[in-house]
Length: 186
Image (cartoon, rainbow, N blue to C red; front, side, top):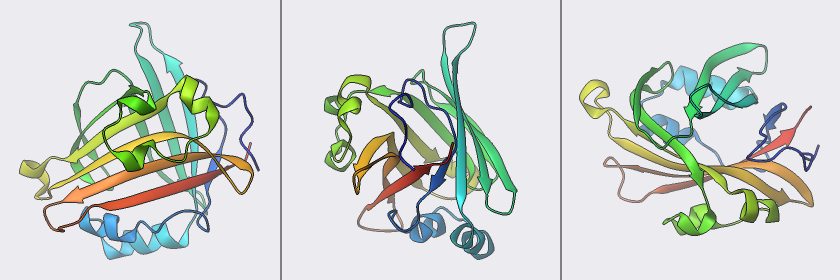
């Protein structure tokens, strides 16, 4: 189902289910991030649903908290993003120790061409949600970086929530570029 026009990067809400047929395979990036074979197999065989909640706290900081569920009712940790551009450390159940920062970005402010492509018209006005997630190499033993943007794209005449990311690691000479598309469920 298409995302309604009322669901935007400034009003991210509803349930968004990963469309595996339209999306790129993420197994290689998960493997390079140190995710175990068992967890990667579960991710490949189940469907991810996102339930974002967007709000501004009492200090004026915009939040996007994303509840994540795999089909079958398997819950993943809530992904908490503060759109203030400040790097914060965390210990993620899937990826281990990392740092992350998120902010609003206009397409023209991005410096990676792949992240600028394929967005719907409303993104030109509302902008994207941008983030950089890095492994905390000293604590995790891994060395990777994800440059990611969230927005909306029209695929097969259907407006969908979309995520694009560039994954880099010293364990691989070339970056991996990934597109993920989600169907609006409710």
